Amino acid sequence: MSMVLLVCSAEVRASLMLLLPSRRKDLTKEVVLITGGGRGIGRHLAKEFAKHGARKVILWGRTEKCLKETAEEITLSGTECHYFLCDVANREEVYKQAKVVREKVGDVTILVNNAAVVHGKSLMDSDDDALLKSQHINTMGQFWTTKAFLPRMLELQHGHVVCINSILSQSPIPGAIDYCSSKASSLAFMESLTLGLLDCPGVSCTTVLPFHTNTEMFQGMRVRFPQLFPPLKPEVVAQRTVDAVRTDKAFLYLPWTMHALVILKSFMPQVALEEIHKFSGTYTCMNTFKGRT
Image (cartoon, rainbow, N blue to C red; front, top):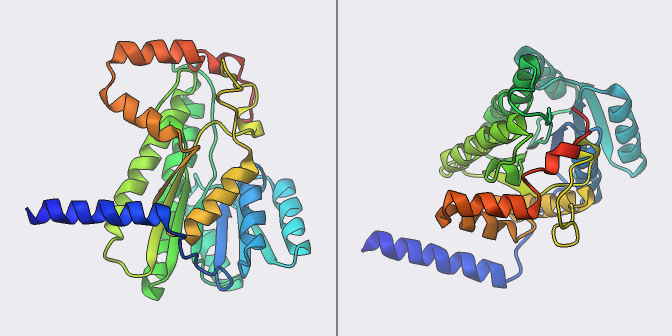
């Protein structure tokens, strides 16, 4: 009975939080590190954190040109910004660059795991090394960055770990088997980490699960009814992500209708789900894929 009361109480609190304006935390003392911060959603996240007063923004990525351009834009806006070349798939490189960041910039208090790649082919058409690359960047990279920065957050009793995931982690599609499986692993990582930090004061997590976002990464992906299911704008994903961090929201689905997709999948028979995939065009949406891998 006590368990039922606790669950009901939690449901009531959650419902009230939806109705009442949430208290947003101040970001003016935060040092934010964004992986894959040179372009796409990462670039917009950097701009959004700077806009909301982050003290310092740090960009990690593999392409110096993009990182430098984004860092210069953030600096011109009045926010201190640094960039470092770092491949999150390389564990030793992550640990090495994390040490450099601490020495040159300071303690990271908000870690945003945004770096990701997609191969965009079926399993049998995929190169083994490309499949491994997706798993190492999209999944294992999170392990290394979180292990590098979380211990200090726990010491300070102040920090936030953010993951830019994907709705494809819960509703996979053909032609992106590497991406879907790596994002599913990433989601499990974040669900476990979020629960594991419940008794750690001052440290929390946010996982963002957006629908198809209009970036060069998924260029060419087409759904059947784009008017009903338009791709998200990366700046909107960034805005909603920063707001979720400021309100300590654990899981954010974008758009909110993605909740319905997850609910439908939980009880509908597989044959019905297959028909939905075929009708909506998600069954063949990767056939025209020509994005960045």
